[in-house]
Length: 404
Image (cartoon, rainbow, N blue to C red; front, top):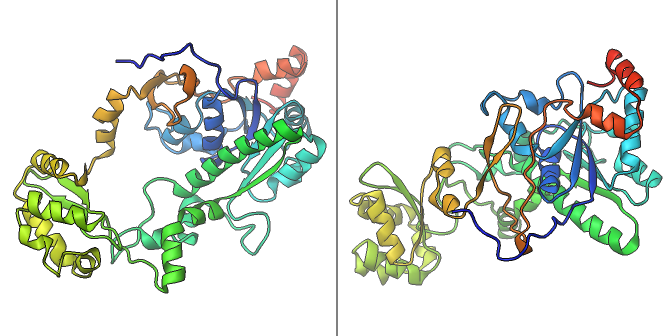
């Protein structure tokens, strides 16, 4: 059943805010999609010859690229060649009237075009301008290519992800997403400051610094403990039992015992081995972690006699945190997401596609603006007209390949 707001619907918080984004791949597009969902008008500047290269990553979403569909709903697409002075002039005119500008071009490219945050804010003091880069504008890594997997490695995420024998990257673009969310929150903070001071200003985001911040626990554990945490697969480096365990029907159940009181309940009510609750070899977490193999064996033997449903029911009844090891398709059919009515259709050039509501639920019944995913250059004509470009001038720009 669709959730019915209890109050009259309120305007979205970013209505009236215009964002111009010279963006590609994931980090900047995902950041600006958050702004679009909250009501901002987002004008996405793309190359005429193919557009944002994420459009070509795959064809899994009914012929469209899954990354692009995820990161680009609710935007207007302007296809323009920034290397042509006429195309660059058009984007500069759009930016002059914008509230926010976001770019994640290769290091130095925006500065060569005069579209870096510092240059734009010097010309337009009320503008909030965001530079997203791999490693920041200075330092020995400033000009290194920075793709998500590479930054995951540089930030140490891969070193703590995987099994004892094999490090692996995260299955999502963690570095891109981290940078995107700090860019999103940075824009909101800068807009709040502008409301007080009347001035915008540059915002700088680095993928490395964003993901290094997310490395907080292993980083502090290693820096201050003298040794980094070991890779433990689905297990936790310093808590036991905390892992996935096979069940009788071929499923896997994850559980996490956070304290010794929970261990007692697990031993008595799930494992049917109450003697383990007071056994010095298992009674406290440090002992269980030191004897992880024996701890896991005790849990594994008990759960292997139960079906997945039986195991989950027994763990829930004992107050033990637990979960099913879901596939991606399981998540798409997750009963909690369905019960919370979290799916909406989003229009795309390939027809409507399912998409999750953004996780920010706003007060007053305000519903996020989950607009259409644009075709390349879909809004070029309308945007040129809004800038006062005549039909004849527009036709000439098209003939010259400046716009598409």
